[in-house]
Image 1: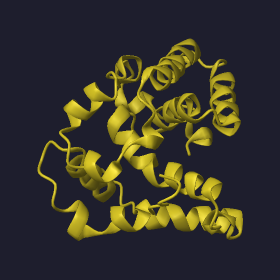
Image 2 (image 1 turned 180 degrees about the vertical axis):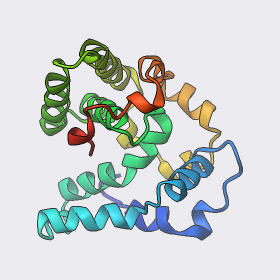
Image 3 (image 1 turned 120 degrees about the horizontal axis):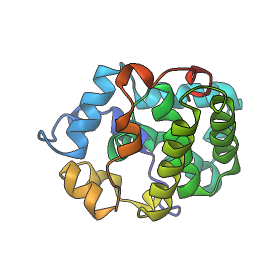
Image 4 (image 1 turned 135 degrees about the horizontal axis):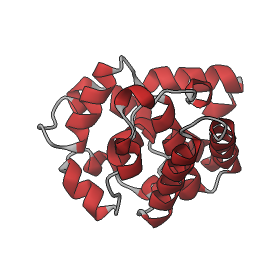
Length: 187
């Protein structure tokens, strides 16, 4: 994968590519998610370029891997079932740490949990984030997936194949509770 260095953001923003997937597939769910949230893969890439001063675009395997993780972030939302609310982002950060071993993700997840322990739902938040971390540890290694093929796969089939269970602790929170005091840690 690193040898080929396929860039995913242009593919994910190409409506000729993303618009061809039928209802029930990862690709259709991704397209619907991006449309409903008014997001684009290039928009996320642009934020990354601004914050890293161009280092994100270096022609190096490690820089490419960072772009791959960045560009698949929203697909990970689809696969894991975590929303873009504060709790969903915090859970996806914990899942991402388990998948990548990046200490930056661990720091954000731990900080979010510690910040919320003072709140009445703090223990529930901690359990929810822990479940997300455990899901990431037990799941197949997502960075190595063939995302072009994955987009055409039925979503539930992909989740089963990748060993990604439903996020039961996250789903137990009412939608209006998922933002609580978590806005500050939302990615």
